[in-house]
Length: 198
Image (cartoon, rainbow, N blue to C red; front, side, top):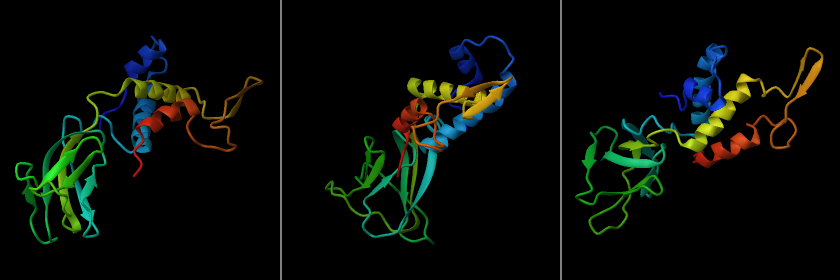
């Protein structure tokens, strides 16, 4: 999967010209990208140009809407449904009004020709959707937060107190809550804008 920022982008943003920290940055940058993807619950750029196939298990007979795990929804390549686990998937089409794509809520709604919502077939893996979602490139405000997060780990700012040559460096904690292990507030605010909570 693609990194959300590159080492060179970080160095350009921080005005770094030498290669002194390159080995550490080669390790930290991919880990920060992975951390942001896991925290936000979306991969941002991985499925913008290549489709993701997601299978949904519908546990009741009253579900009309499924929500994709990646966001924002760009396009839906195919929607398939099966009524029994032993059966093959049947491809649904918008020309027959069998589903509606709601890009505002990243969801696919099962419909009929009159435009009414109907229920998805229930069962294990009863719905399979192939779609594209995310961004063509990492959003600028997210990049800024990721640059700060790389600095946070590169300069060991995650350690609250350090003593170097007899001097003590006190880094600010997060959220003003004692023993909080969260990201620093200025980074968390940006990541929370993109966080998908289901």
